[in-house]
Length: 400
Image (cartoon, rainbow, N blue to C red; front, side, top):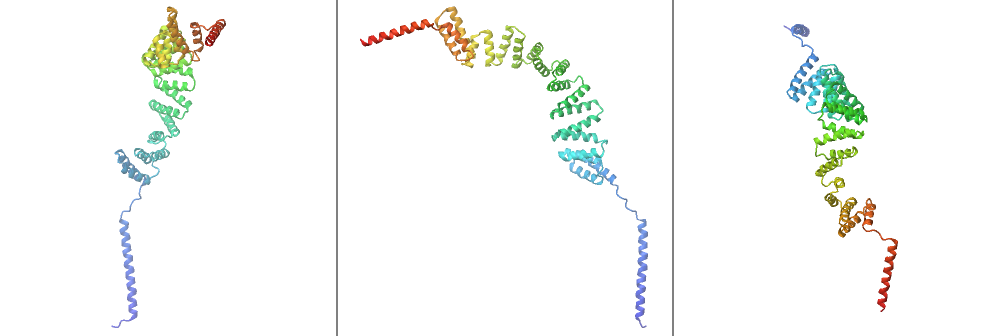
């Protein structure tokens, strides 16, 4: 059979037609298969975010910080509006001591959900971090917010205490006093708050108010010696000598080794005309505490006339005009009784030493003149006459 070119062309065309029909049938078959195949659901980013934050929190609770970081970061990538994720990222960075990052995430958590369940805790952590970083004004702003939303009195007291401390640190004493008084309203019998009110009012110059607060504080706690010390000083400053004296007596009984209390008792005792015996008793207590205290030695020597104390003063300060004068007085009294020449000589010696001190020169000169009176003009002329006559006699003898 003879094959013609036209027959070949027909065969090729039939082949293409067959292949086209086959491809169409195969495509329809695949399409039908795809219709029965289950389609993949779209990703729920919210659910994924919640899932990762759940795992992140668990890792954080177990101190597995790197795993927590991975999970919480995934959670945030799925939903960057999730306040819970921001809060736990803040906690993570706080626990890993990265304060800058912690502050950023806690602030973000509050911004995303200011009334959310974690907002109060985020504020509390922020307050601590701001204090830690020395950002005191930011810390104050946070604690003011915490105070505003606190419902329990113990929380209010906690935040007020913190605010008082912060306001004092930035030297805003008006605000500190205002918050301290609010604190006092919640705890009227708390000695700490009364002490704070007293100190602040005193610092701000309201001594009358400070006085009332300190006295009230001592009614609550009579053994509060720190407050009693401040009150005693205030009594002195306000000229309330008897109250100050009573306060220092109690302070001395509690701290008998405190020289300052004895010194205050001595000064107040003088102003209240306490007896010489009282003053000597206080000075003896003082000299037992400080044997080389020149002022105490001098005062006690003055009151007792004890020559041993005078000599102690001279050992401490040999050029002291007062002690030299007192030593001269001692010999002068002996001379008056005995009329013995050595006593007058010793008296003159010590008075002459005292005369070198400008403060005692006048007194010493008077005593010197009493013991060894200066010559009158007539005596001076007579002495000069005899001296001249003697000189002439010497000259005549020399010529012979």
